[in-house]
Amino acid sequence: MLSGDQNIVNVQFSALWSVSDPVAYLFNVRDPEEMVRNAAESAMREVAGRRPAQDIYSDDRRGIELEVQQITQSILDSYQLGVRVGQC
Image (cartoon, rainbow, N blue to C red):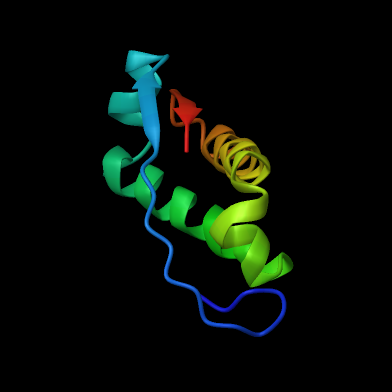
């Protein structure tokens, strides 16, 4: 990914999530697991693209985690996926 200060950063992360609405999870999206993965990756790219590399590597990991979690949950809510993101 390209950071906000134009450095290339390699980011590996996990998103912990759970099903909050089984009906929506089963019937609103064809591949819900792939949707969660894509939404989390998109959120991480967005956040990493706005921050300098130093923040990404060490200074503000908790802040990045919270922002990615909020963005991911917002994306998934817009698709009515029926999942709750616990941690990114």
